[in-house]
Image 1: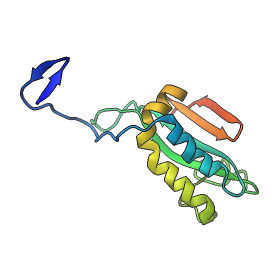
Image 2 (image 1 turned 120 degrees about the horizontal axis):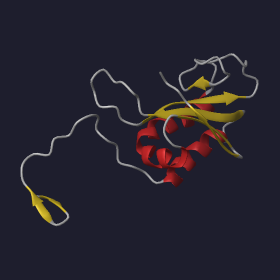
Image 3 (image 1 turned 60 degrees about the vertical axis):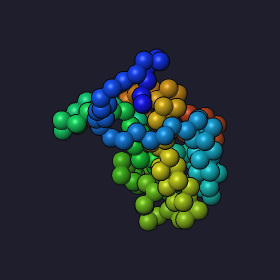
Length: 140
């Protein structure tokens, strides 16, 4: 039986939207991020996190989106955003970078609470070994 503040709840609790992942502590995210940042040639990791303003009638829920990496020697206009950052499935990346980047990407949903609290909503976050840079991100 479900209880709220010690009081029983009868009936079915409707769940809308996507299935929420179990949330992990921030140190787990940092561990996965550091695995990418210490991969050969990696200079920075970037991602977007936001709540969409429209979602085709589905609930608009905060989410962490694909992680990208900048590797030394990469063309400044490479990547999906032509900013020198490459995604985990980019053919220019070697496995030593792809594997930890994909592991980090798989963990994004598990770290949403930590990331939203740490960096806010509508944010583009760029991480280096020295720290984080946050910029407002307009996804529309």
